[in-house]
Structures are given as structure tokens and as C-alpha cells.
Image (cartoon, rainbow, N blue to C red; front, side, top):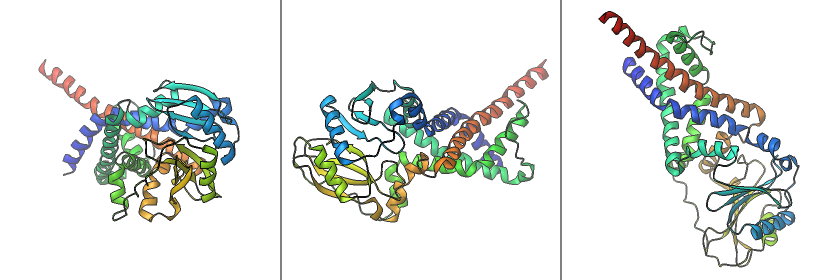
Length: 351
């Protein structure tokens, strides 16, 4: 049985290694995305306190300049720029007052390229599903690796970097690294897969939870953003305004996201829906009052993206991404060395 598991572990790891290296390295880089923005966009270093009146003017200015806005992430949470998401894969940054700083399409900026590579493998929804499957496969690799490791646990050492490129040293390094990082790698692979297969994760974490309420019928009109944002803030006076979403279609409401104290998600999951015809509140979803299973589902992203826990958890996340990449690379190298040596020995015996 152990031999069968060892074979499955080796072949699956070899096939998945490239994906694991890509997901691990890009995940590590994304941990420092906000730091990169503060380094490369001077306006991102500003300390901004989001207020409804000011953000209302920002939203109206951006709407007038970019007629195809889908969502705006407001400045705050340590990054002093507004992040713009438009239709047709267009994005942008704006300063505190709503002045557009830069706009681009697709993955033209480094941080957008890294995000797309990690999130969708540059292949849209298909790439996203492949990444989710790879994360689940990585969970299987870790678990089978632990089973394979168990009989020889006495040989485990804390040495991670291999002494040489010889297969034995590479296998030892792979085994030791896998054991040391098993729990965090499992955590990030499971949460990553949960984000991709959200409906399945919700069913698993919140069985029996009521479905999300349907959006109430609303009219169409020109949104009065100062009024709408003030109405949302009035419902949650101590929360921070984080996002504004334009109607996805005629007859759909405006969506405003807020972050309450105690919420882990960087953009909050508290939602206020607004009728664009009247700029009045038509529905409220208080994330703090959701059933525990749904709150656990909402925690998948902040756990995976290191949006909670401060810098110690960010460092752990970054190191776990590197570990995933190293496990894929070192494991594959040790797997490929053996066949070459066997072929060399076979050639020598033939002569």
C-alpha cells in the first residue's frame, strides 16, 4: 500500500509541479502587493480616512470620466488610492480626490500580471478552475506524503536545503520541507480551492444555510452617490466604506460594501443595496449577523490572502508560498533524476 501511495505521490507531483511552482511564487508576491503599490505609486502612501461626503464626490467624478465602471475600491486600509474596475478588462488607479492616475487593460501592470497568473493562470475561468483543481491535488499530495513519511519518521531532519543535487539529498530535502510546512500548505491550498469552488465550500461549511436573498426590484436612474453612500454609512455608522458597485444590468441595485469592526475581509462583507432611481436603501446584509457557517465561508479569502493576522501571518503566508514552489520543484527534480540514472546504467550494462 505504501508503495502504491509513493508511486501516486511521485507521478502526481511531477505532473502538477509546474502549476504548484507558479501558484506558490505568485502567491508569495501577492502578499506584498500593497507594499509594491506604495513603492511605485506615490499617491498610495497617503493616509486616507474614508468619509461618505468625500467619497460621494470621488464616485461621481470617476463615473463622469469612466462611463463603464463596474466597481471602485475606495482608498483606505493602508493604501491611499482608489482602485477602478471597468468592463472589458480595464482597470485604473485614482488619487484621494478621484483624479485618474493610470489606466490599463488586462495584465499590463506587473501587479495585474501576477494577480491574473495566480488567480486564473492567464486563461480566464478555465484557468481559475485548473488552479482550484491543482490546489486540491496539492492537498492530496501533502496527505499522501505524510503517509509515505510516517514509516521513516526517524530519518527526518530540520535541514531544508539539499546538500547536493544527488537524488538522495533532494528527496531528503523534499521530505523535510514537506513535513515542516505541511499545515500551512494545507491551509492555503484548501482556502484557495474553497475560493474557486465557492458554492461547494459554502455547502460544506454552511449546510442548511438559507440561500442569499434575491435582490429587490429597483428602478433605473442616475445615482446620487453622496446621498447613496451617506445612506449606507447611516445604517452602519462605525463601519468603513470600502467599495461601490454600479448596477450590473437595468433593474439591478447599486451595491455598497462596508467593513465593520471584527470583519476579516479587507473590503468587508457587510452590504447595502441602493435603488439607483431614488438613491435609497432597499436591502441590508449585516455580515456580523450571518450564521457561523457563512461567516466561515467569508473568512476563506482573508485567510488565503493574509488580510488578517498582521505582519507575522503575512510572513507565514509568503514562506508557505515559497515552500509550495520548492516542494514542486525539488520533488520533480528528485523524481526525474532516477529514470536518467536507470537509463545510463542500462546503457552501460548493454555495452
